[in-house]
Length: 154
Image (tube, rainbow, N blue to C red; front, side, top):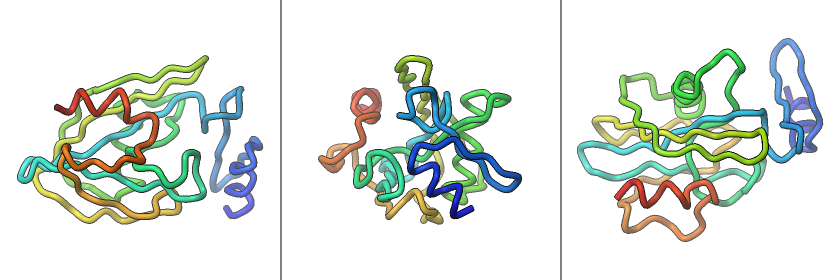
């Protein structure tokens, strides 16, 4: 797995029986399609943002939970899988489509995931830390993908 991760960080196409990462044709994105979520806790109205680790594109920015989706998945299915994989959250939640980003052949769908209460996600190598924020207090160093989404949260 370590070799696959290092190769992916170098934008090399890699696949093995345990783990696979691939880039789109431009080498700019992991995979040809992606999906992710921004969580909102109904009880507090706050949003859960992950701080992206140094091992991913746009490190040190606050983004959404998500990643590449499989060819056989819909964006919603991919977003639900990414929630389980990246946060460990297994309770029920609703999804509302917020935005589709497209660049060349790449597309990324972002959803609002409403959960009853705030929770502490489990973190993996993609996420350095997390924080629950009021919308008015979002940090300045947001991932570029959040720019078109923030107005839709108001």
